[in-house]
Length: 371
Image (cartoon, rainbow, N blue to C red):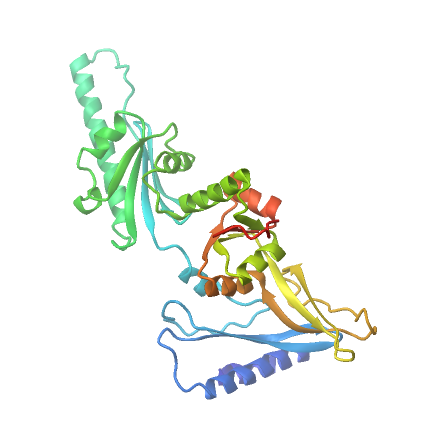
């Protein structure tokens, strides 16, 4: 970092150079005061931001990552580099997906809620109509050989893809397609014996290309009770059930859910993954006026313009900015509430952000603070 500090003097923009050098001075001071590096390492985010009224403040965030940091990374940019931390937060459980018929096969994975195609194969299996001059028996023999070879190609490709996944992470394999093709493949020993033990079931699907993955996952819903998307659907089903029965055991909207969190009445806290809001505390240093407001987070506006005090007209100062998810998560932890992040990939999940503002809760008992 000292080398970076020396090199920053060559930055053409004087303002940018001063900002970079100031940030590096700040980080070097932090590192000098660090007595012991945590077991998983440590991540610093620092840099100057415009706080309005021609003032600059320093962002200073220290994070202990959930997994060990294996690389030293220094990254200087206009936005923070989050990719290494995002990778740590990805769902580790992986499911293998195999779709096949006698024309084609698609091999992929399901990680969390995301599907990925690894390989797509086309067969050379002839149709059922034989060529002139061939006996029916000879044609059927050749066709069975071609089918067996195609199954073997599928098995080899699946073995190559899935054996690379850590055994503890590969939770199972789903096989989909038409009957009796999928049954012949599933029972034919074409998969490695370690993978064969992880086959969770055979499922009927109308499509065997990438578009069939969703169909396969839906067909295997009962089998995949443990994966994230199914859990999300169950949480939203419970929310709408309580809403329909008017039991009083639900709450939605920022203010109402906050009240229920503060009295520890929340059983399940529901966040939309599309929620982008933060709580801003504004204060007037002249008359002492203070106000809190919620705004949608904007990536190009690190700190909001504070404006003027409605009491005395003086300039307001931004005293604190906290992400709504962080604020509510702390309250949920204090009240032993379970937190569920809900995707917009299904209808009920979309309704959470559109109709309920992205924040809702299932309560332990009726409090009268609903929506």
